[in-house]
Length: 112
Length: 112
Image (cartoon, rainbow over all chains, first blue to last red; front, side, top):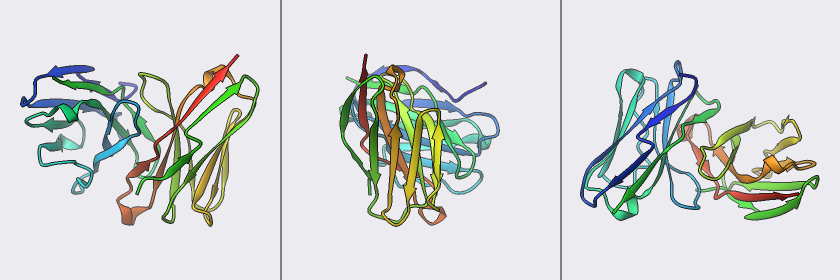
């Protein structure tokens, strides 16, 4: 596709359930980032993948959060045992090493 | 550590100018500027690398003062379409993992 796509666009879940969020990068982009944006707040870095290197997981808020990137392309962010404070917009961005990051439309997660 | 953006909000009349600052407590390698409209993904505006270069896009330009560890975004002759929240993302180079740390954002409202 022409841009970064994310699915689902909206997700409502119950506290304690697991959720998976997907990011399809722009073809050829080797760098992939996950961010979280709470209502009215800035962008909080979660995790960064660059090519075949080990991911930078330094932004993950707890061990309930994990992400993988298969074949250097699609990425999945998994949140286990969701909590209400996990409610936010989860944004994926992709780019070429050290260059511009292009953001997807985000997944709006609401944990009830 | 999160860069500090100022002001937090600004209201302009169409045609007026504004300056948004982004200050870092650490030496900067790069600064990325984004604009986000309500409910939408951040859109890339420009990237500046250390060296004091200045860039422009239409009537929006930016400067990077390496010595002051600061970047400024200049909105000239503002248009209604400039309304949104502006974020700076600061990069600290390969040693820091090439990820961006975003400021809290500056809300800009341009009125007719």
